Image (cartoon, rainbow, N blue to C red):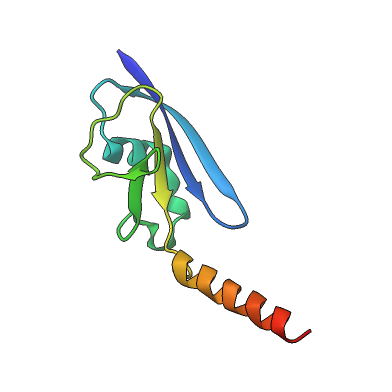
Length: 98
C-alpha cells in the first residue's frame, strides 16, 4: 500500500513543494531523501535543520501517514518575540515625536 506526502521547504523569496508517493511505513527520513531537496540546501545536508509534520517538530524516524505534510524549517533570522518588542518600541517612539 502507498501513502501520499508533501515535503516543503520555504525561503523568504521562494518555496519548494514536492509531492511524493511512498510505501506504507515510510519515515520522515525516507521522505526527505526521496524529495531530492538536499541538493538545494547549504552543505547538501539536512543536518542542522528542524523537521516537522503540520507544524509540530518530529524526529527523522517518525512513521508517516497518508497526506502528511513534512516541513523543513530554516533558522530564524530574529527571535519573533524580540522583533515584536522592537517594532512596538519604534511605534511608541514615532507617536511621541509628533
